[in-house]
Image 1 (cartoon, rainbow, N blue to C red):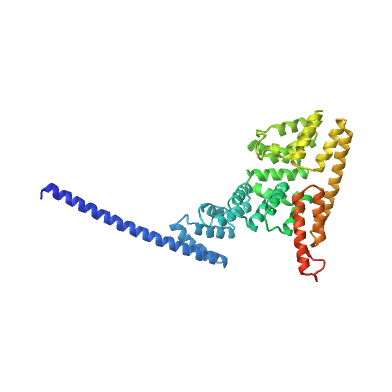
Image 2 (image 1 turned 180 degrees about the vertical axis):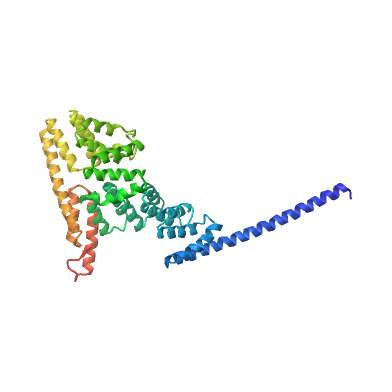
Length: 413
């Protein structure tokens, strides 16, 4: 055998040996890695049990070891996030929950925990984004609905609260408790002062929290603190020109101060595409205020077109009907004006009845006759979906009463 052939054979043997060594090392690494992964999952599970028992220190020590080897372990980060949250370390909890990918089987739980931690930390804009994404991805639980309702109430966003209740009640089960809260949200005005201290605290910790700025401005406007409210709203619009709630709130306040030209500038300085879904021109308040401003300029025909557009979006609104009657009088259409004025009065009377019932339901059970009465009032307001909801609840209650005749006067708290 020549020297060249021998050299070639030796190189081949060395290559085979090297491949075998690498294979053994790879197998060993994979085995060790797999062992540590399984051990990590078991330790994370044990830490979760300890967390439920209130043994935070013991649970944390287990997870510290797991996260040292696997910093992105989903189960460990979920439990550690809960520990941090329970310990008051909200920022650390948020960081843990954010590690968990959407592909993880526990992402649904992590998403709820993240939204709650963001809310408690005052990051209400990020919390709302997380909740919206959660509703798109998963079937919502009662805790998700409750968290979202509280987040919107904090910002005095009554219309959004009502829309969310409608979304929840559009699918079974439809509870009497939810229907009662929807009735209250619609007809019992929220006291904005209840959220003042919380909003102030949020802005102390997060001065750039834009939705908190807008919400606080609305609260301050209602409390007569116009200077600071004006500053907050303009700050919001400087940073986010398409913040519709802030733009409409500022323009309405300016119009109330008889500063009509400034209000007009604020309202119409928008980059919105008029046909964009969710744009400012999809809000009835935009058209109601546009009608008011046009009327002040003597553009009465335009004022009528605007108020009719507002009524297309928000049918049977007593304020818009009264406003329309006033415009029609200026257009020398007394018969139509009388009809609109009468409709406004009738709507106001029905809404007053619903307000009184909503107040009563805070302190007493709701009976069958109550459900039927609310349904009838909604029928008069031409709101068939609301009426059908209360008729459905009345039918459920009637069926329950039929199976328990001894409980006459039965009602649900």
